[in-house]
Image (cartoon, rainbow, N blue to C red; front, side, top):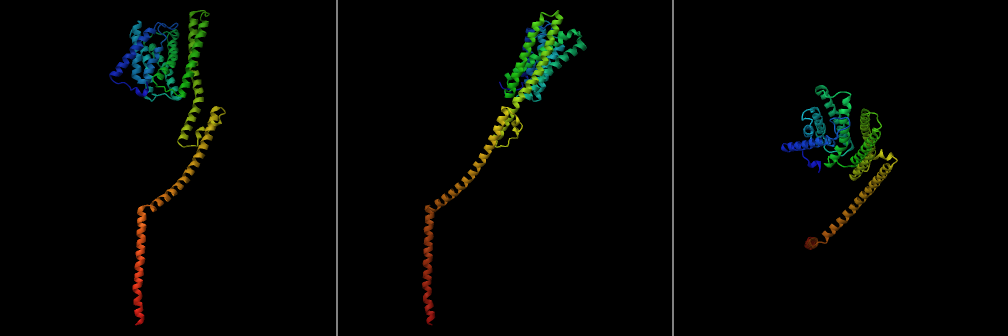
Length: 370
């Protein structure tokens, strides 16, 4: 399914989409509410958190916001927490779809470059921070249910850590499915490195925490260890993502330069300044760039020679054609008839002159005798 074939639904179709997505999000929230995180009485592991992000990126801010807002409200009601008790978290879930939706209108509809991919993932991480921050501030000023520092491990870190990791991994996967992320060399390498890095970090952090869990002296110490590992996981994911972007650019930038050079050769441009920096490298890309520059020079030389040969051949062909045209005219029956008539005219003219000379000769004799 291509994004170019997905049109922003309007009217009834928009309403149907929002209702269906909100119900799905709500039922998934209710089902996953049993997967509570350590020391978190209300925060569960929710892979479906990627849904509002995804719908925001694809269909715009209001579809994403209403999906997250209404879906979280439905999920809380079905889980027994009440439909409106945690309204601040309804708003937070709405923000998960709202901010990515603005990126939809800013032109981030198709992601085919590394730069756009980085922007998309940055929006995902920033949206998580903003959404949880709004929920916490709303609680501090109005609800007054959080108690610090207890709420740090009971509300804030569980929601922030799990949602960042899950949305970071799953949102690109959903966008790939609808082809909003176009699989190019850049996006393929970045996706592979990012998912590999996230998998290694999460598995390592989970294994370390699980190993030392029974050795800790109290439940509070276990919880602190768990979320400390979670914080480290998020930081390592972010730093690892930046490193993967750097490594991907080391591969994709030379490929982009080589592709541009190939396009220039296709268009008849054999001076390739785009490869001037690349030829200085000592790796395979540098060697390939050097070979391509040499090839372009040879192609330019051969093309120049061929043009000169074609010009000379054209001149010879024009002369031959001219001779053939003249021969064709001369050998035509019409030309032969004209030539015979011309000969006849010349013969008649010569005869007339001879007769005039004969007529003029006696007159001269008579004048001399007188």
